[in-house]
Length: 202
Image (cartoon, rainbow, N blue to C red; front, top):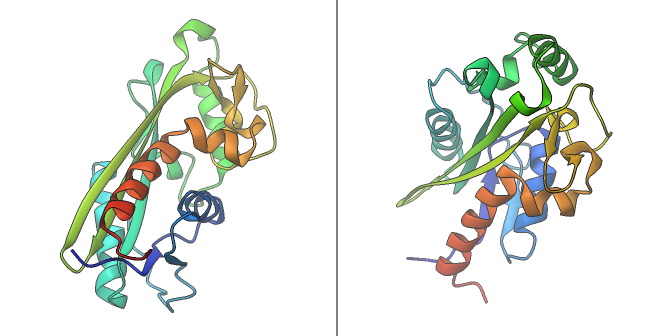
């Protein structure tokens, strides 16, 4: 298989872009954002699974640009809410995709639920699509939903998702610390290994 010289991130979320760029930085691959490839399309995430949404976004980016494309979809699955917000995590509080409103709605839904029953799981699916390439990579991270937001780093639900081994939320961790244990970090490490194994760029 030929090596890869560049890859397009099919996401305009600055937080996701920063995490993905950070983890792919050791590779000698040019990492592009949609603005770099003049890709303006908005992809409707109407899939019923994370994988469907990730593949739809990566496929649309590749079809439009011809550049090897990667897209992710991530969901927060809360035990006490029967897996909600799940695949609809980004729009949990409405189409505005407001992370503060999403966290507030989640905490309201868990009012009165004791700490031991506030278990949750972050899941990320990455889709990589290009010429002769159609791969998916998954990452999972278990934790708990805190009673109140803590920390000012990260994005999304990071202020309310605590990792039990550290006693801290993602929003209380540095980028490097989060990448070592997070769902997206684990999926990206699998993607990075795939790219390393197949890249001829020395």
